[in-house]
Image (cartoon, rainbow, N blue to C red; front, side, top):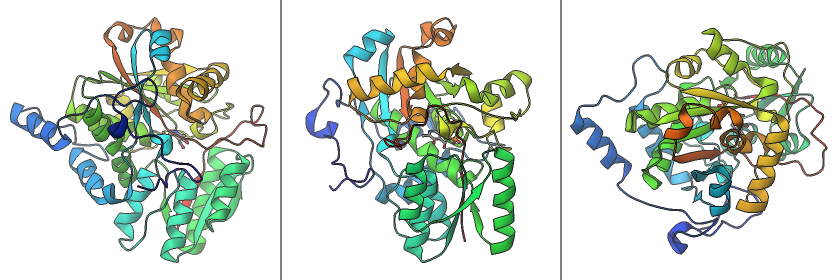
Length: 371
Ligand SMILES: Cc1ncc(COP(=O)(O)O)c(C=O)c1O
């Protein structure tokens, strides 16, 4: 099958074809998710749902809706990284995937749309709108990485600049919406987006049922909300840990304070992780995410390097942060450490800008719209 989730690349060798092996090997396979669900129903355990933006039913529906258009992403393992971490690590390569949440939302709104082939939210919205023949207005902060802006333009998205603050992006986005009548495709605070992200857990726990802990990058919280709601419905005892940059640690502060905290500014190399929690994602983070591990930029860069050199996967800083979290003192000295033996790490994004020097620039999240 042609690999179209990461432009200009061949699909990595599929584990189905090669069986378990050192990096590139996916391990385990097993009962179908529906089988797992049935087991849960039969055992009388109620899936999580009430009160949250998504539940196992909406996530299952999302899976059915988008499955013709997505890849089953591989789970990679590495003996070297296992021995560094002193745990069994399973890297779920969502960096090879198209935008699950975007797909799910756009297919719900525009059933005729063809599939976007881009994993970044903004580029996926641009492409999906182009294929449908409708304009897309993409609100992007002035300091966004060049590669993300180029991807939006390549797919015909109309770039609308905001200042590099969360508030400015929200304000500009609202103004665009009022002026154009566009529908908002919010990157995280949206039930369709959250349900689409939840399909990652369905796939991961089907691939590696023995996983006891999942580590997920957190920004506005859409990814972790979906992953958490699905994973805890399948296995209520599974542990969900968020990985957050220290320079944008609003989620950790929010959890400690018991209310949503927005920071006056953020500064981190992980440009995708600078948004703040929304009213749909906060309840999941507050109630169901077990802990938030914060890591500095140096640790994120080191994790990126390990992904590249050892796993042979190019992951952007925001995508590599889960590995940094697992290797952090905060995690290794926590109570969760001893009970976390089979750890799933979501590698979530591969937008690396090889031209622009990003390390000194504070980055932030984009909002995208399609009318
Ligand atoms: C690469 C990457 N990973 C993870 C996330 C986290 O997404 P969320 O806002 O849903 O927490 C983002 C957000 O844009 C991202 O760019």
